[in-house]
Structures are given as structure tokens and as C-alpha cells.
Amino acid sequence: MQKQRYSNYVSLHSEMVNELERIEKEGLSPIEYARRGIETAKFALERLRQHVIEHGFADEETEISFFKEVKPQFMSKLIFFQKLYDLEVKRPLKVDKINAGKYFRGEIRKVKKHYKKNAALYSYYKSGQTLMDKVYFLRRSGDLQYTEDSYMIVDTSFQTLHDSTISEFVADEAYCDYLYRQLALVDTVQQTLGFIQNQPSKGLRWTGSKTALTELIYALYSAGVLNDGNADVKDIVVEISQAFNIDLGNFYRTFQEIRLRKKDRVSFLNQLIDRLEDRMNYWDENPKQ
Image (cartoon, rainbow, N blue to C red):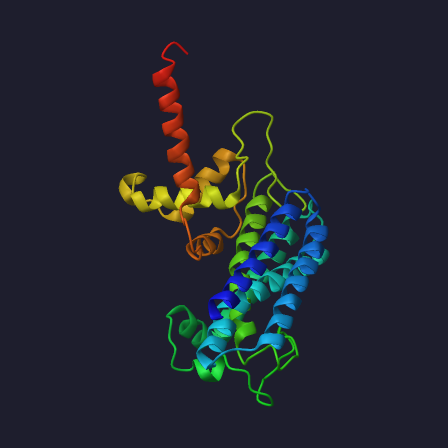
């Protein structure tokens, strides 16, 4: 039964991610993209909430796992798109480089302030501690704390003391990636309405999925074949993104999703091997071609 429930969570998450990737490919303005992202994330989160209300949890361990690991994968998407929407609605004109730079740096400071305010919880979460899990990630009516800047949904049947804070940590990884990309654009003449959309008339363009490219990048990183194994994965992402004219977004989160695959976690790499062997076999059989 628990395996079936986990499978349902994975299925809901995959549907949400696929829909967000489809929307991203439509080439919408950042504001419209954020609005559509909010709608998609809200819909997925509501389906997740209904599933929890209808089926509950077998035990406390399962409930903790859900609110500590599963729900943040959904809630973080909603928080990210809400922040993105607010950012783009209020951002200065693209020609106003000075104020735009101040604006993005101000947003980065807000994120840092949030991390500093919740430093103990962030350290607890990142280090994989479990001592306080029953306090942080079990539903308890009457003892939830709310703040004006919180993204918590007021629903004691679907929230715990800190699952939304964890979700915001996850969301801020993607949000800061976006902010730093905007700063990079401000510092150059290549400014857009929000996304890096470099589509030159010449050069190579990655037309596969972002997940596939992320899998390839981590394979190169793990093999240590770049800069004698001293290249950081982030540096590899930057170079390959520029070479193939693609914005990989929060590649850390994408890799985490790859790791969560139950079967064939390196499906793209296996596909590359199969295609290369097919090509070699073809050339062996047709040497003149």
C-alpha cells in the first residue's frame, strides 16, 4: 500500500514537471509564465492535498517523510512561481540598468536574510538530522506559528510546523539562480524580459530535454574528464549551457529528480550507448557509406 502511495506521489510530481516544461517551451513572457506556473503548481498541490485527506498515513514515519521530502517538491514550485511573478511585476524597466541591478541585489539580500533567520532549521535540514522530525513534520493542530512573510497554507490537515519553510529553502535555490542570471544580463547588453533566450542564427542548439542534458553533465563531472577532474559542476553547466544555447535552470533539483528514479536512472546515457553501437554496426555493414 505504501509503495502504491509513493508511486502516486511520483506520478503527480511527474505530471506537474512535464506540464511546467511544456509551458516553458511556449516562449511566454516571464509574467505569463509565472502565472501559468502558479496555476499548475496549485492544481498539483490540491490533488496532493486531497490524496492525503482521503488516505492519510500508515504511521508517523510515513507522515514525516511526506512533509519533509514529498510535499516540498510540490510546494517549492508554487513558492518559486509566486516569487517570480512578484519580481517581474515590480521590476524596473529593462533599460534602467542601475535600478535593475539594485533591485535584483535587493531580492538576493532578502533570500539571505531568510536563510539567516532560519539558519538552525536550514542546517538541520541540509545535514539530514532527524531528532526534531516529530516536532517539525507531524501535523499538530493549535501549535503552528505564522508570520507575515510566510508561504504557509492555513490548513492543519495538510501542513506542519516547518514543511513550508523547507519548501521555501528549495524554492530559493531556483529563485537565486534566476536572480543571478538577471544580474548577469544587466551587466551586459543582452537583456530580456526575464529569461535568457539566446537564439543566434548560427551555432549548436540543444533540442533534447533539460533532464537528459543534466544527466550528461553529471556524468562528465563524475568521470572527472574536465580540467583534470577539478571542474565544478556549476562551471560545467555554465559552459555547456552557453555552447548549446540553453538555460538549464535549477539543475541541482533536476539531478535530485533523476536520482529519485526507481528504474534506469541513467536512461539517456544508456540511450547514447545504444545509438552509438547501432551507428558503428551500420558502418561495419556499409563501409562505403
